[in-house]
Image 1: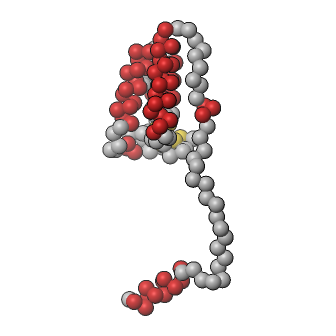
Image 2: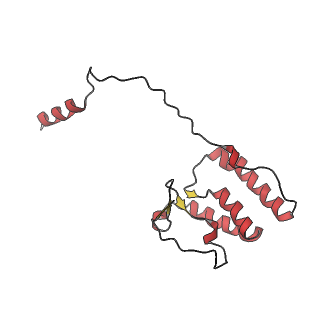
Length: 144
């Protein structure tokens, strides 16, 4: 047993004939803030309120916490799309429903399809009340 352990260790050990070059790893995560639009493009009351909430979420929570949302689209993008597709009240309710599902890590893989970046695919179109927009995607299926 000791002899077999010595053979395995010596076969994977570094020897002098192997050349190890110096590597320069980059630990910075590439992140583009260009996808976030902090400006106000509409003057309606519901748009201003929702955009203020989104900007506050981005600035105080999302940027500080990092890119940790396990879903695609991210929680803030989900909120923006849900308000655009429905109205402010339904968008807020859809966001809180999504946020509670995001905070529960148990059994996610049994309920959601997987997006190509290994995040759970959960768009707001699956939760609107318009039957023409809802389409069923089976769990554990890879979406590209």
